[in-house]
Length: 254
Image 1 (tube, rainbow, N blue to C red):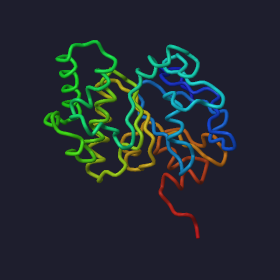
Image 2: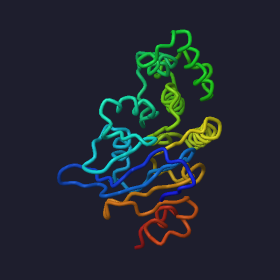
Image 3: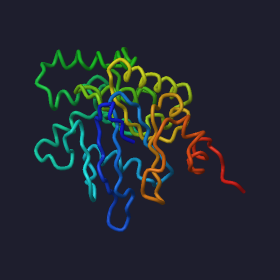
């Protein structure tokens, strides 16, 4: 789905991905636009997480290209690390370092890639924790956090280098309904207040209907995108019966 009236921040062009003997997507193209909350979804084994790894440059494609704000994350040579640092990533587990405090975890990318003095790095990390509604957590360890707080700290760390494109892998997985709803609300606030773009790998329908501007559904059978649009529209109007079944959470007919 291309919209020339909006600014594309991620452009996937003629992408084929997988590995020898197993192609997950073949010759797929789409754009993700500034300030969108886009869910990448589909059934098990369709390649959702592999697509995320390919977008961030960790999984070389078999063919095609991916542009981040117009620069190839596949073919830009020495510029690739800089392009990757413009993306904020949160993995499903949160991936926090158990030996560091929460503030040190959030500060870690700044320690690695910023020349700011320590005081400024600490201030930035604390401001991000405040924005994620975790003001009193700075000196705690990850082991002292709830599942929801671990996800919030992971998002805070993803924001620490100033990224405005964030990719989240299953952010609501393992969370109770209230915690998941609160996290969704925070993601929407970050989009509205920071102008951030979110690409979220998930099949959590409640989160999708709460915050998704758009859903891109992958299909392992056709190795392509079989649905691309707003969730309410796809639920009611998709010409594909499997897509309607998915969005309505209906079992197979007996």
